[in-house]
Length: 423
Image (cartoon, rainbow, N blue to C red; front, side):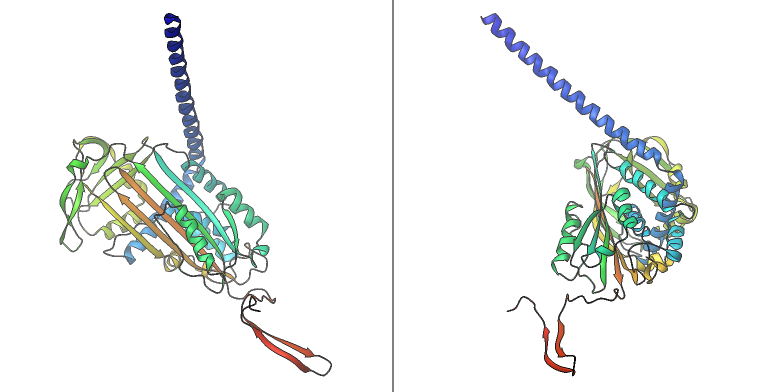
């Protein structure tokens, strides 16, 4: 009996180990299939589209940096591009031409552009189990405007961008909280709101939210973080927390030599399974804004291509955390998107859309870099307004009423309604 009991226990333990092994293999297989799907979508993204996106990133970053001299800033070119690509599906005429040109898609059809963004978004989902990258899109429509939305525009947002549709009352103060709650939920609370109020002529918001959190492939040694000096652009110094590794690491690195005029140093710090990375660039001379302008002029690809695998690279990186907010209206107009902000360029968005225009493109970001890794978030909102809605009687605010005898023109009653709920 004792032998039978021992054998039973052993077989039971063996079965448990086999079961756990199967679960582990299933999890590994599931992860492998997710990686394969994500990598296939990444391969389907055209190099031409990537080049266009990177060129737009460099140009818009240069303009934002110039406007924000001496300030920390971060933008998410991807978030901005997705929000504008969604908007572009409602663009028409000169506005559509301008948007395609500025975004670098001159010769592409909207169908092709949408397909590329679909693959791009899908390639980023499930890209690394040790990294979280969530992309969410939504469209918020006023309840009186929603019935006018064109089917093709609605379908593009749903099929290519997986945009969640919400029909709301733009004149209800609670709508601000609803939109901001969606933003907070999709950025893990790092960006709590994107709008403070809704303008009287607003009929729609197109919103992209992006959240990123990843651990370094090689983490910094917390015990070696120390108070170091950081030199500001004006030559003064500040004491900051500097991170380093216990030992020098093998990274992709580039240096044109310290003190070399026009030179710079660069390093690649990978995340997770080494498919995503943090890149740092330090110019040897001049200001960082001058270096940003140079990157826009020469093209970003050159600066990434210069890095090579290097042994024993010492790295010092400050811990940092900040939030940034910027209205992109002037920046986008400077780049060439002028008709986006003028009524008449969004005819493909809704019926009777002659008076539709974009009133504001707002961008907010958050980033924290520490010993474990990086957490970042971004939100881009495109606010669509209407200078004059189609003729109709919309009693959605206080109004006057008259009861009249039309035979003689005699007015029997005349009044106003301030609050229909009052009795």
